[in-house]
Amino acid sequence: MGDEGGAAIRAGGFGDRLAGAMSEFGPLCVGVDPHASLLRAWGLEDDVEGLRRFSLTVVEALAGRVAALKPQAAFFERHGSAGVAVLEEVIAGCRGTGTQCVVDAKRGDIGSTMAGYADAYLGEGSPLAGDAVTLSPYLGLGSLLPALDAARESGRGVFVLALTSNPEGASVQGAAGPDGSTVAAGVVGGVEQWNRGCDFSHIAPGGVVVGATVGDAARRFGVPLADFHGPILAPGFGAQGAGSEQVRAVFKGALDRVLPSSSRAVLAQGPGVAGLRRAAGQACDQLQPILTGTNH
Ligand SMILES: O=c1ccn([C@@H]2O[C@H](COP(=O)(O)O)[C@@H](O)[C@H]2O)c(=O)[nH]1
Image (cartoon, rainbow, N blue to C red; front, side):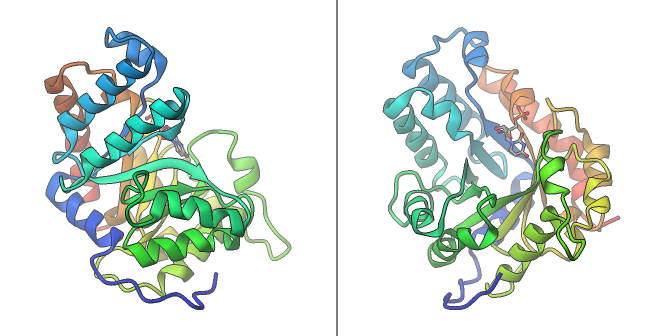
């Protein structure tokens, strides 16, 4: 993907902030996924007040203690506009704590519409703008350029879906084009090309999503993770079955840029703030020896 027309981002953009947060708090992202079943397990109603209590408890417990929080937009949107207002409170709650807020909205559309999503999730002053947003490249990676450019302008970041943690993903993401390269490899290579136009010190602002559950698919599909300079969001750690050994195997050669993400496995240890902190701390302790230091 070309870099034409974009102003260079200042160092200290999203990737560098994330690198700082990972070094301060450890390499873990905790997902804020207020499933109806979790609200009930916490003794809350499945309504906006329950959603608010749940989400703000997670923020109170973990903001300023983990590298990133990742609110899952779906579970806020299912409560309508009042639920989206709670998502805005979660994003505001992360601000200024050092914890990076990744809004997991998986947006993607034709370029002209992408500009609207970019304003919402990456625009300065937007209540829905965290530090980064997840994007879907199904309409072509080039269609995401308005969001990438907005991220560069505002010092924010993106995570583009490349090789997702669900078993159904591989049938699309492992498909090969006429030159033999796979969709997943093209996404990672395209985001890397965009990163080359950005100014950064440690980690570039353009990230990708590669599930911790994908086994040897990254290698089989020729996904160039070792040459990628952005952050790699790795859902699937915890409830979807991946542990630290899977993280080590999948991301060999890129371990210093991997941000494993766990939602239900941590959230199930609520509603107490202490239980949430303990669960996040234990997950971090498992990952720390693998993800910090040299790439094995
Ligand atoms: O490939 C992907 C991309 C995103 N997700 C999201 O991450 C969390 C996972 O939750 P767990 O409870 O830890 O399984 C959820 O919000 C997904 O939408 C993903 O799982 N895989």
